[in-house]
Image (tube, rainbow, N blue to C red; front, top):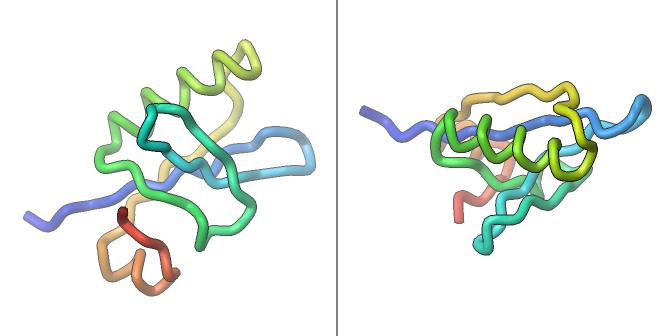
Length: 82
């Protein structure tokens, strides 16, 4: 079965949506550019880390969307997998 990758697009304010960046130390960063986004390796990891991050930053879970990509689709957007 082909490995799937998951990007998270989150609404952090009324006027701003960002792509989340999972970091090696377990923290989460943000970027406005899809090319700078980094994929999560599972849907559950994306969901759990996104919700935990939002709860710690905003004290509620804001609106977000998890989008599944194949390696070819990530390549099309010039997104690195590591």
